[in-house]
Image (cartoon, rainbow, N blue to C red; front, side, top):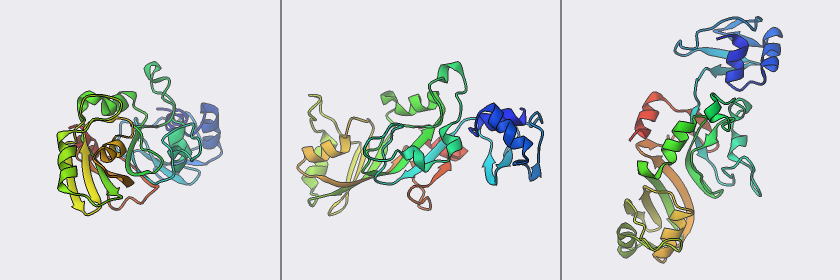
Length: 246
């Protein structure tokens, strides 16, 4: 792939901007400055790395990320009262171009599902429309684990009701948790396999309690790493993607 096309594919600006960065000596590949926009590089080579204006980057044909979402951010490109989670990402990830005509609406990475502004924890992002659809599909029944801080002390009757199923106001069919464990007097570990609007908060309210804080700790077999600080992101590894495969 031509170097200017490579930079464009990774979100570093228009083709003209990328060519200008190269011609100005602001791009190096493998530690060597390259000033020729048409220089060819093998993007199939594992670990192709380059530097743009002093920022180290690695080539990824598709972007698969995890973010440790802090409170006070909306999962929206057009946030209202709160800043969007996308402001926590580098500009290159926010402006990656579409890969095909079928993904023409996918510009930059998109959140895979949403977390409320006051909910923290594991959030996936990608520019792969098929991956996003697969992760969001209710037929996948991908378990998501939430750490819930409750206002009132938990008791066995509440966790039993959550496991049996509770009726929410938008459907007569009971909704049951795949797992409900009282980790502490005010700490509930809740596992869900579907994603209704404000589901955790409404389910906890239905058993006579209230959510004071909510944190997503796991999706499928992928756990939020303990060493990923709030507000920080990283690429998903091959093992991470396998953990999401079910």
